[in-house]
Image (tube, rainbow, N blue to C red; front, side, top):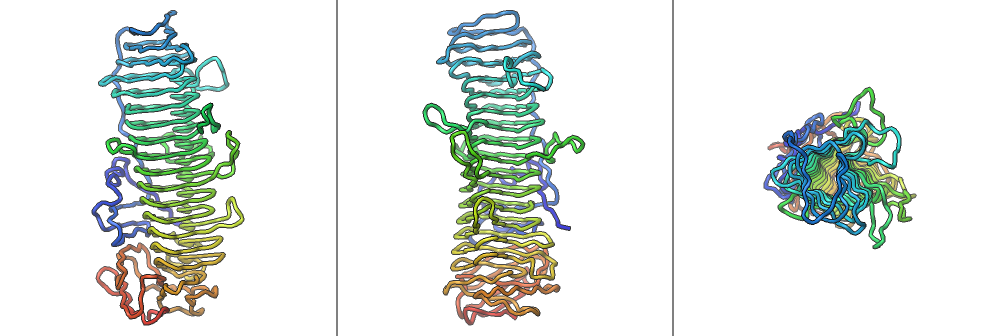
Amino acid sequence: MKKKHLLALSILGVFALMGCSVNSSSSTDTSSSGSTTSTSEEAGSAYDYNSEISIEEASEIEVSEVTGDFVLETSDGTYTQTNNIYKITSAGTYSLSGKLVGQILIEAGEDDEVVLELNGVSISNSTDSPIKAVTADKVEISAKSDTGNTITDSRSAKTTDVESIGEGAIYAKCDLKLKGSGTLVVTGNYNNAIHTTKDLTIQKLTLKATGYNNALKGNNSVTITSGTVQAYAKTGNGIKTEDSGVNSNNKQKGSIYINGGSVYVDSLHDAIDAVYNIEVDELDSEAPTSVSIKTGTQSSFYSKSSFKADSEKGLKAQNEIIINKGTIVIAASDDAIHANYGDTLDNGDKGTGNITINDGLVQIASGDDGLHADNTLAVKGGKVVVTGATEGFEANYINISGGYSYIYGTDDGVNCSKKSFSSCAITISGGYLDVAVSNGDTDGIDSNGNYTQTGGTVITRGSPGTGSGMSTGLDVDGTASITGGTLIAFNGLETAPSKGSNVYYAATTQTSGGQMGPGGGGRRWAVSTSSTLQAGNYTLSGNGIDLSFTNDYNYSSFLIYSSLLSSGSTYTLARSSTTVYSWTQSSSNVTIS
């Protein structure tokens, strides 16, 4: 049986653990997933990964009950009142307070900007959206400091489309901005909690949005710049866009931007679903970005008796996902991060299917793939930790040029397959990659095309306890070459790579089946069922090399290809303080006895 590792940390514990920068002062990583490694190049954070994922509910956002008669005041706007419906008909600032069972209806001019100031208000409606903007250029809703405000759509769950009524508790057919130093709790029992057909922006606000379907929906875009946002989606998506066309100014629509603040998403289906791009960044050091997600079977809305498998991804984009900075924690029963290739967008283009990690800290536990790009997955910086997934990295092309990646997979740890193109490849030019897999027919790195390494450090492991060369540290169907950097493999390689003249090679004594030469030839590494390489903390040291890592399982063989090895130098592989292997690199190819 393949062992599946998922993260077990409360969300507060995760942020306490991961909130420090990638370059913190700790120098030791530990892992029960068998893949965590620290190096002399990295001062990485310490991690503790357990067997099951458990991201707790976010802290409850509580609002005191609003009492008193409803009051609407304005000094520069105009409105009319018909029974419990207040119709705003012009630009201006409108102050709302008290309890209203009714509606704020905005029918202003197409160029008008309307500001609603919430000063401790409770608005509910059982026949339409409590706040509904039909015409305006922009609507801004500001929860004033030290006030608690609730907007409740108390209609029964939507069963048919009715164009005359709103799609959410707050519904707008114009740009919508939510802001303020106060608190806003929005409940959409009919369909969505907050929905605009244009651009949705959230700034500084403390917001809890619960939707029967989606929590936050901006057809054209959703942007979060600061504040605390909790998005709960009982049957749909946490944050969603719908239109991937271009506007009248030729600006692309359909993206979701998280540029600051604390964002928590609990959704039965996709947590953050963009019809175009998802971009996560940290534009203001005073508003650090943290995103925590649980979806599908990990959601608090999951019910085994009623759950229907559909799409339960953490981050999903029809075009591209770009992570520039921030801390992201995902517990998903489907792919944690997924980009589609080839879908026809509203702008006429095809989705690119790319995922790019430039910086930040990404932690993933997934019931399917960790990071899945239909086209190219590029890791250029930051730290990516996949504590449990079927395949940790899955893409047509995988390019690692920087950062630190720690992968544990119940199938292959890193896999390139011909998803969208006739060829596929894994290219390592820099960075640090550490991979382990569960027992079975699993490979640490599996390329259904080529494998090329010109730099960086790679530690990869085949299946522990497997007495067959079919499960190895590196399996390549096409060509494999190493012309720079360092590759360390436990349980060997299924096919030997060609190597550059500056790359030296050393390996432990082979068992029956023949010795795999360092220059190619396709001979399998025959793996012994006994193990000298017992589980424990290891160091590999010598002239030019200083690596520390942890093996959680026993392995039967060890090899290294590295441009750091040099003739005449002595190298030592030690477990704790005990030397396991020591050898002098007397030539470019050495067998360690």
